[in-house]
View 1: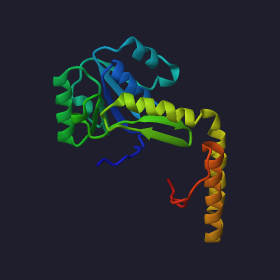
View 2: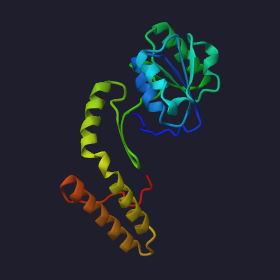
View 3: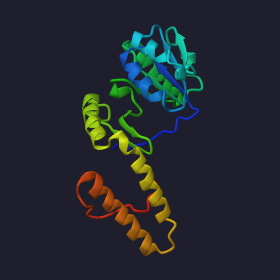
View 4: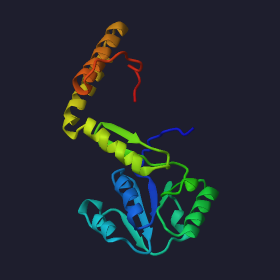
Length: 206
């Protein structure tokens, strides 16, 4: 049984090894996290080069050469997306020996964790994962969830969060629960076409 987690990578040192299609998919996720990202590869695909050329990604450090053992120094987390089995195994063993978390693209046996297909709607983030078994299925489910949570509703969610924040300041526990329950029912009715049948986690902070 795996425990779903969200890592705060802001300011953390993250290493990505690879410059092809699989590496580009990892890069697309990592470049939005605020991490200090280094990418090592003997060569970078045209698509990867095009992404790296974007002005807002100028802080990404790229190293055009083969992986070297010293590259993992000070890394909090490592992602590999390489075709060379021997290189993938070598990096995995280095990480194991030094207690560094590693994710190997399309290689479940060499993963400490799995990345998910993510629907990012500002204050709402939904992650879908098959735990490394079928990334294509995760992508299909993500597309359907994106249709369920269109981007134009972002402002609505912020208003709902504001209502909830005001509700939790109420002194009466009974009134607080009643108001939050009503908010949840209105959300289900307005956005998902049915009234809520009950509320179980009114006071959780996540």
